[in-house]
Length: 511
Image (cartoon, rainbow, N blue to C red; front, side, top):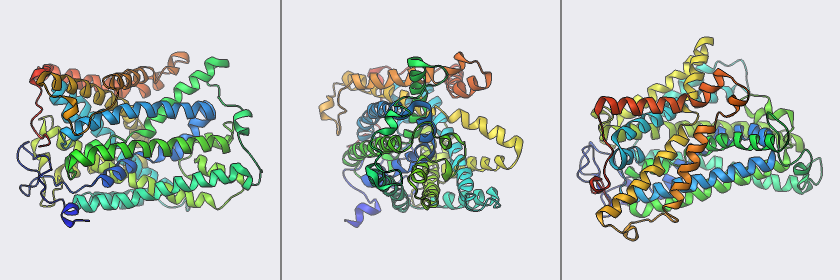
């Protein structure tokens, strides 16, 4: 491979981008460098997506909706992700800029939307960074419960903060190898599941027995078809949380070599890779683990709660929990690495659109936005709140804010794409001339927007069946905060929606 490509040196095909929105991305030292390749973007997104949501959250999802209900939920949310990824791909390949969709929201729709969306998304990833640090400590306690979580929070915080100060090409390479472990694990589990289902385990041939007894759908809250539908709809949020991070491909567009070529390629491979791995895993978990298995709902955060481990135990393979626990550790650590990266680049995007202090765009000679990295990483120190009883309650509320931030972001991405297409039409630019044209538009964008908003509004519908004030705020606090940020910014700065004819399609555009 050409060293100049790996080093991220100047290319006539690279788009322009800098802290002031002008000039080549590599024209000076105080700018981001385009050192990422297509495969780096893919593994960055995989690192941020495949984590505790799939390895742990899928167990509770199976118990709530049953094997078929859970599978349908993940496939359905996968179609929403497809609408988001293709919409993002069209915009990011045309205007590859740091911060990606937060920048598009400000330029294409309304600066207040970019402000609210960007800060919610940044807070989501920075607090998730703290969550992953806590999860890493809990996972290690699986081997020795006497160890203090605080020790590992401190160690991993230092390690991943330092990693994010490395040159982007080194960071990309590290994340690629880290994420590979998770991909290999899932492929290994699929092979293992095929063997067990075919009769290699202690229970003999299983086939689709778990779909017959206890059944394909689980009932939730009430009985009958209503209970089955409630179980299915409840799992949509879990599936959405599991897929959250796929959009990180767009966040890295501003640091990608030859974005017109590499961003569309990365988005296509990332989507099909993540969805196929997720759907295959959920399918085989549903074959091997009956949804009424008590261990699915034990509520722990180590390997004992993973449906992959439960499947191994039911098959009589006792050594696997330790292997899965080690993989879980690499999964959360890889996700933590991605969290700091994505959060810092969102801050850069916010600063570029005057929605955050300008000093956050400053970079060192390696192209690392050190103020943005430091600010994002500092939020990870909230993980130490878990060392005190009252602090853990505060930390839990902070996590509630991040619960449905992914659906808010996906909704805004589709809104941005709809406005982007209107802007192209107003400027007389054909979508056929774009580096990448998303299929089935604008219908696919409207499809994704409709269901994202519907899930946002109904994700806490169970509290209206059995009222709980605490559960109500858990379900809707992030949506309420988003509205407060949007309305507050609009009232203070008196912003107006951007007319299609006035949308800036030239700054940072691929030349």
